[in-house]
Image (cartoon, rainbow, N blue to C red):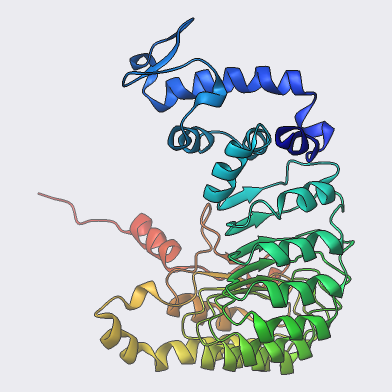
Length: 390
C-alpha cells in the first residue's frame, strides 16, 4: 500500500507507468552496480549480482549503502524515480540527498515540488530555474516549511511568485547563503527588506531584473543586515541610486563582485563609495551607467595606491592578487582615455588585448587608444632591435 502511494506522488510525465519504471530501474541497477564496482569485477548473470558472498537477484534487494552509491551516479530525474520504488528506497535516498536540480522539469514543476519537499528535508542546494513560469507561492511555502537546512536556492524566472514567497523564505531558511531570484519581477522592496532581516548570512544574491524589489530602500536593508555579502547582481534595476549603493558599500566591506548594469541613476558617488569601502572588489559592471565620469575612475586608482602599502604588508607580497580583475564600462561615454589608462596602469589584471578582454569598453570609441600592460610590453618587444653580434 505504501509503495502505491509513493508511485502516485510523482507526475505521470516524469515516471511513466509502473511497468516501464520497474524495467528501467532493473537496467539502471545492473549497469550502475557494474560501474560502482569497477566493471567486470562483479559478475552479473541469471544468478544476479555477487558482492562478497551476497547475491542480489532483484533491485529491491540492494543494500542501502550500495543504493546511495548508485544514485550518486545518476541524474536527478532518475534519482527521483528511484525514491518512488518503495518506502525503504525513499527513506534512504531522502536522508542522503543534499543537492537537487529540477530545471529539467518543463511542466508540473509546482506539483513536483509540493510532492518532494516534505520528503527531501535534508536539501542544502535546490535549483528551480525555469524556462517558463511554473512555480507558485504554495510550492515555496512548502519548501520553507520542510527544508530548513537549505543554503543555496535558485528561483530565477519565477514570474508567478509574489511577496508571500519572500516572507516564507525569511522564516524558513536562517542559514541561506546564496539566493537567485533574478527575473522575479513581482517582488517589492518591502518584502526584500524583510528577507534580509532574517537571512543575514547571505553571501551571493542575484536581483537582476527585480525592478520593483531592488531599490535604495532594499539596498539600505542589505547593507544594514548582510555584512557577509560577497556578490550582488543589480543588473537592469533602474530604481537603484547612489543612496542605496553607498549603503551597500559601507555595510558590505567584503563585496567582491557587483553588477550595476543599466543602473542609470547612479553617479560617480557610488563608485567612490565602493572604492573607499570595498578593498576586495574584483569585478565591477557599469554598463550603460552614463553618469559615470573620470572622477569615478581616478577614485579607484587613488584608493589602489592608498591601500598598496597596507596590502603588501598584510598579504606578504601578494598585492597583485587583489584589486580589479574585471571591469565593464561599455557605453560610459563620459569617460576619457587618460583616466582609463591610469586604471590599466594601476590594475595589471585588467586586459584589453585579444582573448583576455577583462576591461570591456564597447561603445566608447574615444577609448580605442587605451591599452593594457601586456599590449604595451608586446609592442616594445616587437619594436626592439638587438645590437648585431660580431
